[in-house]
Length: 578
Ligand SMILES: Nc1ncnc2c1ncn2[C@@H]1O[C@H](COP(=O)(O)OP(=O)(O)OP(=O)(O)O)[C@@H](O)[C@H]1O
Image: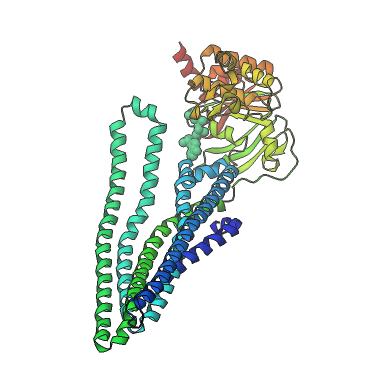
């Protein structure tokens, strides 16, 4: 996924590589100049003026190389940042697009908050990884190999010091990384948990406040936060021993090199003159080798987090939507519905939530669904617009098997107003137009009137342009339900499903909505899921659900006579009203 996304930015990748090579070349070149400067300094055959001239020209060369390295570094950072940001923006958009193609079931499988963490936290990790790859990860091996080769070329007799130093640093780095590994791995999981707690807390702040749950929430948050702190502390301790270990190794290496070279100085003055310049650059190369190994180790550890995150995003991108739509022409389906021996289980659920359901609804009928809490009313309703597919049996709409109609046909023909009124941040108009993108003002007015929303929309100074806050928090429960019903009826669907959508409305408003629906949506098949039998008493047909089974169907009068379950519900509700 990441490689494919990077492929789009070949020119930037080329620029990042070239600028990285310039940086490495500058770093490796500098010690050579130093060596030459030292050589000139101790050269007894040169006059003072001659020395000054040569040292100045080497000095200018040294500055030029440093400037070259600096420019390389700035340009490399720009190129790396552009690649990282462009690629992560592309991945973010494709991930969001992919999630939009998911069925409701797919979203449930991942869980909504998990998908949010993948699109935010994980994507940030990938962005940091890309930045690292183009700034450091490729530079490290180049610097290591270059400094290693040049150090041995500069002081061939000290090869063993280099090898010894490399071995010691690799051992210390490997031990430290091994010790840090589990802590880094724990970071991601704890960050997920901390994000989840913070998000739940803020989303449910009304519940937290009303149940005075602040202390509980704080202790829950503190527990995870303290654990994260513990891991951070452990990493800090390991670092604090790593740094002195590296310092000791490097000082021992320098000491060894100087000690060894000093034997040459006593042996022969001419050799020593040559070696003195070399020792300077040799020490610099040693430092570069050490830097490369330490950086390599650290970066690979951080990079592993990035790879885990890339894997988590890849998992989303590789998920094929579980629901496929046939590529058939769009059509407006008529409102007849037939369930033929339909059974359904939620993903990961072993038991069937709906069992062997069969019924028929004629075009234009008004049908009520009643049953105890958890009997499967909403589940049944959600199968009609294909939010889920049944595990067994078939559902036909307008005589067509649901599995063989296009997604647009379903969208044009069926509206479901869910139990929980969900609004999006934006304006009222933005929310209502989700029901019909090209809705005119007349459409909005008509639908708002049916849903009894017009009375409060007209009182708002900005009417349809009024702002809706995140999750519709600036509207009351009843107002949110009315807006949801408006959104549902705006496109004049052939099938309208109201899933307990008037529960927050007062009895008068509920009655007005029903009357308006009867008048304005005459030919529409209307399915009303209701807690109160009084809401569906006039329905052409009532379906009675009990523990996932359709135990009775008929008109109110028929059911009062024939269905025990219906009678029980009816009697209980009547007793409550009395
Ligand atoms: N998304 C889901 N994943 C797993 N199980 C679910 C899911 N939604 C509902 N259920 C389970 O399916 C069963 C039927 O739930 P459903 O919401 O259809 O009942 P209902 O009759 O509409 O209830 P209510 O009147 O309380 O709205 C319940 O046992 C519920 O726990």
